[in-house]
Image 1 (cartoon, rainbow, N blue to C red):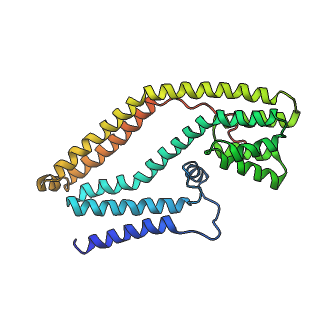
Image 2 (spheres, rainbow, N blue to C red):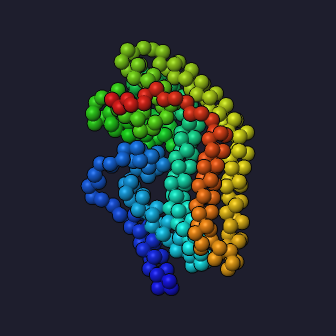
Image 3 (cartoon, helix red, strand yellow):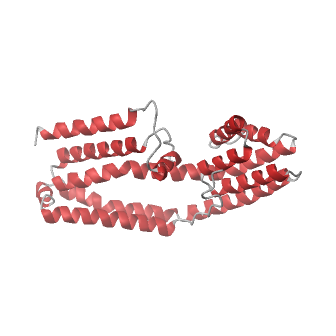
Length: 287
């Protein structure tokens, strides 16, 4: 066991390093479009799915090895391996939600800037370029990619649709539909329509923020309820008798069932306290 532990720990560290640093000169198309879209939404567009899974598995092995070295219990090390391997998924899932919240709060300012550029006499592509240069920081990359796409393809409608697919946000869908309609049929009221849309979006964002702040106690309660039993587990496993108890078949089953119940209960509490997402109107549209 003393010779196996450094070996396993070394493999885990190597897998984490290799998964995070390896780059392919010609990346192939991802086999799992949904997983690749999830990585892109979490800010990991440059990471391939296999790299992320490999790094998570390596982190799990390293976490299990550390737990085995500290606690000395195989059962606790198994739970630590599973928890550490799932930690990157949970972290980047939360990061993706935070990015969507930042974008939602930034859309009203972007719409007002776009409306101001249109009312000042700029063409629609020029107004989009203004948002890419001076708009909210979190939305600038998307508008710059939109402008670049339009310059390369010459198809503004298609570029707008592709931006809506990348952002995958209900507010972006409404803006895309408004801009596509204005580009196709023309009209002098685009600035007024955008300002009205900005007011509606700002009111919706403010209302959602108020409700989420009042429901924050649900998230805190879920985290406390999920973490308290495992703090007790660490205290019990710190004693030699407790560590040996968790090495038995019954102890491992108790740990696995407890972990499953914790995950299901935590996810259920979060789902109960979460606001329903607004349905998208451009799902499946990527023209």
